[in-house]
Image (cartoon, rainbow, N blue to C red):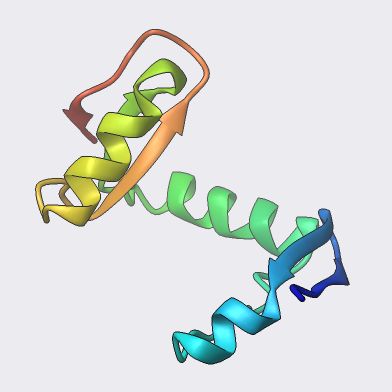
Length: 91
């Protein structure tokens, strides 16, 4: 029998198969990334101190390519999905 547990998070619940996790020695880790104000302050700090974010951007439609590039070590810094059609540039 497969059990699925749900744990609350800021984005909602996340179902996972605990039996499969046990048999495969898998773990789930998470950490808080700060409040909205913390994020806004970090963006403003970067803006006012001329700090550029270094990512490889992919349009949302290329999410699978972004994941494949990340797994293959081809994405530089972080792979970021964008909502527009711009992608494949390092910024």
